[in-house]
Length: 431
Image (cartoon, rainbow, N blue to C red; front, side, top):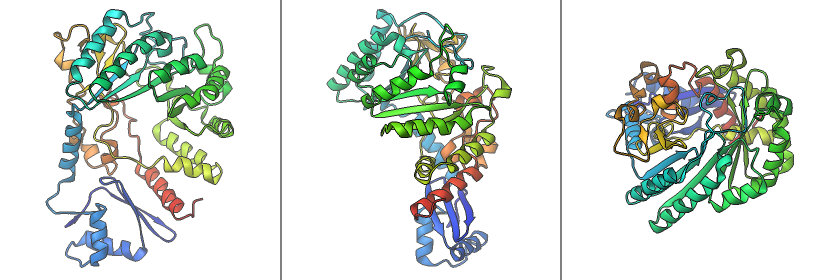
């Protein structure tokens, strides 16, 4: 028996917090137990207490000598990558947008075009043909601004729902929208379309948001979006508000948090995400690097009342997955309004990266189709040595492809700081 390469520890006042990213196990050791563990790590012939040894083995801190964790992680990733039981479609019914956000990475691809009847029918035929071999159809509506083409969403959703019912397939649908057109009428349409999840983006408080996310004519959008959220949140099971963070607006997270706390919306999740200058879409001086973002995020959480702090920190507990996103999965396709197909929604609109068109599946550019499927983060020397790898899996494949350096979502010290808080929360000692 040997120790796992994915063990992490943090000394606290009374004991040691221990986390294993390979099994996603979190435990608390006494100081004596930790000393015992360290003795075993130096010499695996050291006699550990049987119950203690069994506990470490059960949680993955100790593993069999024959196990190569990296090989198992590679198997996990490849098994998820080529699992065809779920068909995941990201559909942009239009690339047109009513906003002109200053950091939009699609700014070069705006098109006043909607899915026409021929393209819609081709998508329906494709889904119907796939229905024989899948257990689940997952659809994400994207854009542009998808609510500018809500008639297309309504038409396609009706067919998707019928196909899933006829073939006993689970159906799941989500929409990413700027929220400006999310009035009561449109919310009712989306509910009828069985769209149970939604994400809307805000840029902090009113001043910060309206300086970055405005209409084509320059008009402000913040107050309308807040009104729409308050009036329509009950139409969705999961209502996600993403706060885009730049170097100058993170403090306004508190303002957003307080606003949504007062509304009492139970199904709303607010989270922060840094704006990245991945393809020259934003000023470097306005971006915030991952380390600074994580430190600031933690400080903001820490400044909140205890119940609120606990809510946000508990969400930081990682989850194990086989793939980091859909781009590196076989059965995932992004479809543009013209029917062009891509593997990653960050490539949407860039015709040099399309691998085919849904209206003619006989012409597929296989090299562009496998551009992310052939990614091998398990062969990256830095990833191989990283204790976070089992929950990071090499990070965003798109960011790796374009050579973006600041792509690590987790940092060990930040993660273990959160793990310490989670242990204290579970023991009733937080903050």
